[in-house]
Image (cartoon, rainbow, N blue to C red; front, side, top):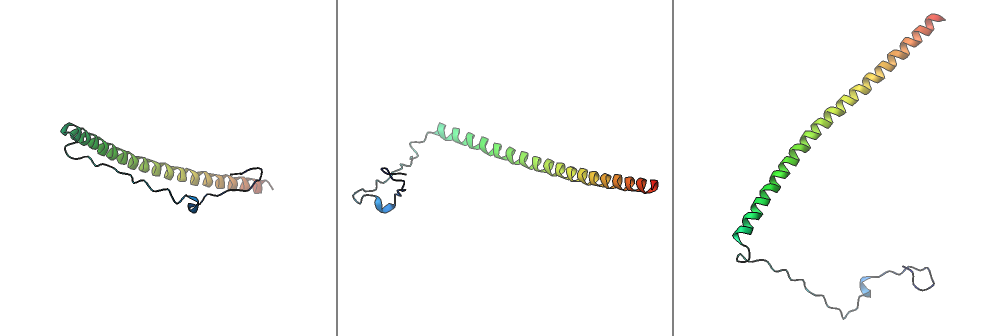
Length: 102
């Protein structure tokens, strides 16, 4: 933050707060049992059940994806190994061929 024409930075610290300011308490009223209807309670229970099911499905899908990913990763490593081996065999065959011509 710049003040006036200068380029000095201005920092606000806790001691800059006026001492006359009082903290205003935040009051949160907890609903009493009379405030919550049976119908609303049942709706919340149903939603909670859906949320639990959704979490279970998500966890199951996550595990399936991890298994699939690990399989894919293993296949990729195997393909890389085979590619490297074929490259070595090709280079070896080419060297043998060149040595035979000399």
